[in-house]
Length: 323
Image (cartoon, rainbow, N blue to C red; front, side, top):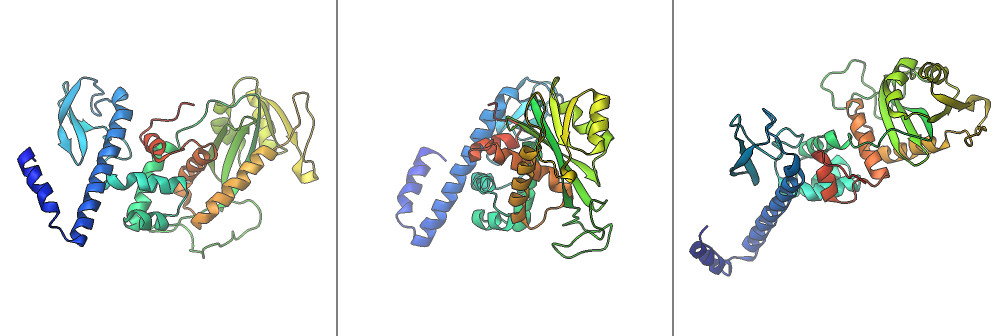
């Protein structure tokens, strides 16, 4: 809009009715919020921006579309923007993202978030898991010093699936067999005494030695003392991986043992389990296929990794807090 047309538009504002003024203000606010989000995304990504096709770093500005600056690669001529190749690509209503991120910081449900920002429930669900796709990759360095590991279990859920591989059960149902079985999904959590945490969805049923080699071995730095319960899988794993190991026999009533490097227990990691289950309860059951997203989301909240909507937006596009 040129200056003359803009001046004419401004003069006409005084003729608007109250409802028209409200609609105009809402439209302007949405436009401003969209521009802020676009600017934040570009500022966060521009230093590491690459052509999604050829990975080239030589490109130039090539107009705008949907509120986002577009670029054209000099090498392959592909056009792209700062969200191309990220989980947030092609998502709409960017002007509402900051409010939605504020809801995620507060751990609001899908329905409540949808109501507060004015989108459909399905859109709210899609946004949640698109935003969490890369947020869950924000993890600490390998654990060191004294680390604890233990499992916790959730009943396997096919919530939201179009077809089920088993008979349907009521919400809050129980497994058909007592104890740990293939109907339970195992979550392995390892946590050192500084609070750094790794978690893994290992599969159904009890954790195995092979799963410990696959998941736990890569996140333990050399010289780490691993504390666990008396599960034989941990004993076999640590012996084969040559990891210093101490354990307590919880089934025999032992809660704390002794070791030259400190008291032996798994109370730190068990407290994390308890906080995670308490936080998860507000969602009234989550689908097993999304469980890793919720684990990453909770760790980010527990460690205060997403202290603002802007930080959460950056994490959603793979730019993590370095502290």
